[in-house]
Amino acid sequence: MKIAESIEEFRALRRALTGTVGFVPTMGALHSAHVSLFEQANQRADHLVVSIFVNPTQFDRAEDLDSYPSDREGDLQKCRDAGAEIVFYPTPTMMYGNGRDQLTYVEVHELDNYLCGATRPGHFRGVSTVVTKLFNIVQPDVAVFGQKDYQQLAIIRQMTEDLNFPIEIIGAATAREDDGLAVSSRNYNIPADKREAAASLNRAMGRVWVKYREGARDRAALAEDIRAGVETAGLRLDYVDFVDAKTLQTPADGPLPGEGLVLAAAAFVGQVRIIDNLVLDDELPPKIDLSAK
Image (cartoon, rainbow, N blue to C red; front, side, top):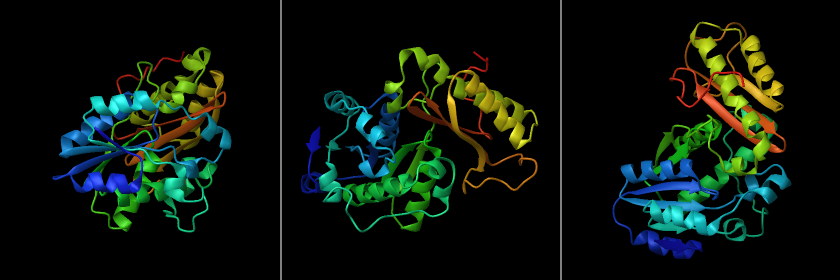
C-alpha cells in the first residue's frame, strides 16, 4: 500500500494504475462502516483508493473540528487490511492553499436547504467543494458513500450528474452498532453513561416506521412521537422531518404520501450531534430495537 501526502505524489501513483478505480473518501477515525464501504468499492473496481482528510470547510462549529477524533496508524492499518492500494493523506493547506481563503466553491442549491443544511450553514458547500476536488484528483470510476449521511449522498449524486463526472455513485446501507445506533466516528465522543440514551433516537424512529407502515400519515403526530422519545431519554432534538427521497423537500400540507419518503432526524447527546435516517419504503434494519428503553 502506498501513502501519498501530496497531490503530485498521488497523481504519479494514480497514473500507474491500470483498470477501474473504486474510491472511498473519508475523514479518518475509520470504523466498521468505512470497512464495509471499502468492501463494496473492491467488489466494483479493480483498485481501491482511500482519502483521509478532515475537511475544515464543512465544520460550522470550531469545537467540532477541534474534537474530531484521529487515529492515523489505526486508519492506515484498516486501509491496508482492506486491500487499499493508495491512501491519499492531504493537509488543509495542500487542499485549500491559504486555509479557507479560496475563491471557488461548489454549491448544490435547494438540496442543501433542508435537514442538516438548515441548521449547519455552509456545511454542504464545504462537502461538495472538497468532494469535487477529490474527484478531480483521484479520477475514480466508482465512489462509495454511506447512506447514514442521506442528504450528503443525495447532494453528491446531484452534483455528479450536474457536473458530468464520469463516476458511478454507490450508496451503501447504514452500518449499525448492536444497539442500532448508526456507526459514526463521532460515536467515539459519546460518554459511556450516555450511550443507552443515544440509542433512543433510532428506537423512536423505528417505532414511527412501524406506525407509518401500518397507515399513520399525520406528519406532526409522528414527528412528536420521535421528539418525545428522544427528549424522555435526555437528548436534545435538532430536527426531525419526512422528505422526498430524491428532492429532499417536505411534501405538501396534508397527510403524508404512502411512498417515496425518507424519515430523517438529528439529536444532541450532550455536545455530540448524531444523525440517522430510514427510507420508509425499505425494510426496518434488524438491529433497531423497537422497545422504549
